[in-house]
Length: 126
Image (tube, rainbow, N blue to C red):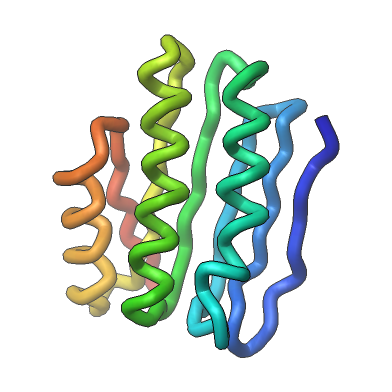
């Protein structure tokens, strides 16, 4: 399965999905013009990945900001990861947030309360 990547812009995050080592990364700002259009290829890739997922999938999410429409799409990504996790593959989500960013910490905690996948909250200092 081909790796999937998108270079980040001022409005969209950097995305790196690699099936060979089970590493998934979303990093940056997520305020695209059309969130559904931006996130659809990610969800589609995960749909294909789940048929032959790496034994342990490690997900690194490091968003400095995302808008409301992105939050729904990020949840869709997490729901695909939850499906992979239910398929007896290990999935771990690392949610990075800056030390003074209570909003981003809360957002991670909100996702953690919805999705049945282990989350690790990781504080990063400037």
